[in-house]
Length: 239
Ligand SMILES: [Zn+2]
Ligand SMILES: [Zn+2]
Image (cartoon, rainbow, N blue to C red; front, side, top):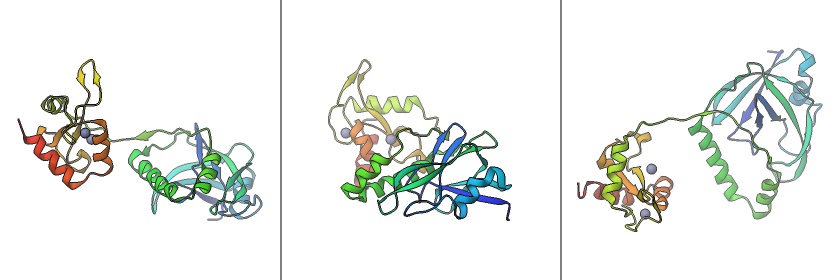
């Protein structure tokens, strides 16, 4: 189609996040290395789109190969330049296009997919040299974008959680250490499902344990089998 331009905000591939301000996205133009050219290819079409009769449609990617339609967009302010490092870490001039959504409703993002895309970038960041990391950290937008997300809320039983905490008697059911601090309700522990609800686990006292914040993080980050076995034994003891 000659009168349509499709642009993609790829949260998986791109090293930058296009910044949202309300219903306006500051979209980074095309060109992976070197200075971006405003007068070539897609950048030219996008730049001229208020006058050239081309309708612009924005998609975004949070999971490899999964394109979500965001909506029709219009360039509402002139394109402007910023200095950002390219793929190879060399400083270059990029063009940013302020594009406003026609529908004025930003699609709600699946929080899980957004989190996974972010975690992929965290892993990439972990592999950068100190020098490149500093460069990217310095060039990251200091004003971050905000957009609505949707997350799955589980209506877990407060009685099950409370039961697990009382059973633990102030001692973490994984490391067996006393809880690290007290609140006015007593020793602080967090309840955790051995088999995660997200993976079909049940909200029962046999599947719920009370953990110190460190062990709770550990379970969510490592989720080691031998730790799960320890917790299963703890959850059926002293019932
Ligand atoms: Zn612990
Ligand atoms: Zn948990």
